[in-house]
Image 1: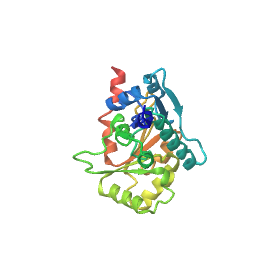
Image 2: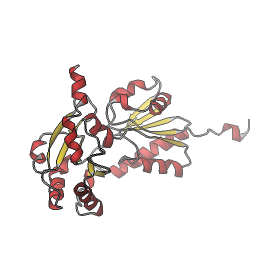
Image 3: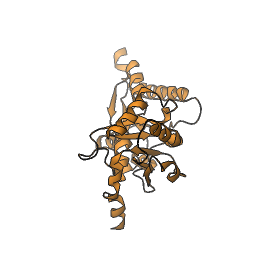
Image 4: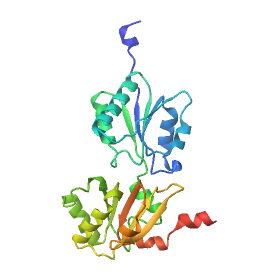
Length: 259
């Protein structure tokens, strides 16, 4: 047998979005990749019931980040994906939400490309849209908002950045701003919007554990949401805009629970 026939071709890495929390919201393609995988590398934001779909002989590795050197932990994820694929294995990198929305999926895809590992991006349902929808809040509406912005609250240490100035302008112009990973900075975010002349009467929602059975939604305004949302737990998202007022008419999840 020639040397060429002994060379093992690398396996494929599927970078899969698991969706916003409810395991039923993973895509058909994402579920197929999960079931096919020899190795599953998953983060802490997925619903663990999804792992029931994994083959019994598959290897499951929790690569959820802990407090500490996140860059070093991310490098370990890159190494695991590449090494497992070089062993000829099919790898499913399962990430909460959508891999390319604040998920470092692009960094992982780039690392695979540089290593010559074949990969596929499987988009997921983003919490930025799905969580408001589960609370009866559309991010756009013909009569209320013709645009929306998604911004990372974890980067809100610089509330005078160009992006946050754009967020203020969008709120004042009638658009919707969705803040992911911003609960710990809620007071600072609200104060920044108010300082930027956003009206204190502007509706705001804070939603915790969106799309899950224990979802909670608190409604208020820029003037009072900081007090109303005390005790909310991560993961949470913040929605600012007139569309929040539509929740009073579209509480479909609560109605379905009563049927």
